[in-house]
Length: 189
Image (cartoon, rainbow, N blue to C red):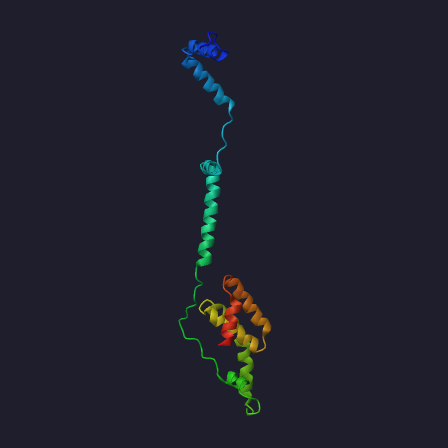
């Protein structure tokens, strides 16, 4: 049993099939697509694309080249070893007498002649200036452990300020090294 009356869905499908054959022309499609492109905003370039565009402009090329040049110079200067002083002659030997007298007990030392008493004063004044320059010159040649031993020696000899100064300088030169642990290890040995 079929119903002779058509339902609204069937009428709609029949109407659709009759009108379906006509499609919009290509010109109308092109107009619609052009209007859609104009209506949508242009996408913002990404950071990388903006950076590349800035690098292509002459004034930014100079700025970036200057920055790269400065960074390159700084990296080369920081990695360059300090020049070692070269002498054409052998340095004069230091007199051993003042050091021996400082190490020997005072009760065992005999009175010294006047010339020997004057020599230590002159050599101590000279050795203080010489010590500063020799520390600067010898610092790159000495290893970290040798400089830490020098810190221990300065502390034991009653010069805590000099020891702390040297230790702080070592912290600045070797920021990644665990200097306290190395100092304790050297102290145990």
